[in-house]
Length: 71
Image (cartoon, rainbow, N blue to C red; front, side, top):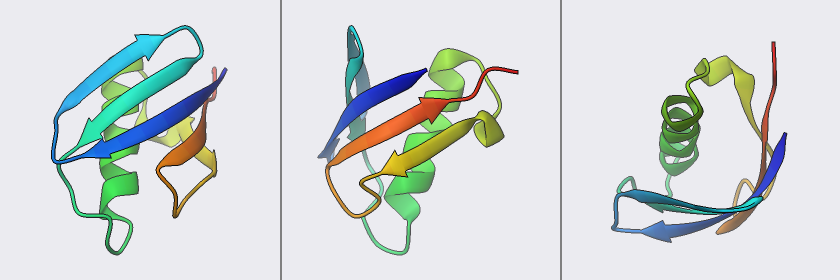
């Protein structure tokens, strides 16, 4: 399943609206720390392993496409 994701910094939340998700991250967007936090939040929210969450596009952007791989 693919989701459009928008990131907001300095907040801690997940808001789901259909296939669009807004995620608040507390990590700084340096060295991939924010992307790693995003993957961990998605894994916890969807109750899947972190290895099943993939950022398809937008690694350096606030708008991303994230995929949950079903096993």
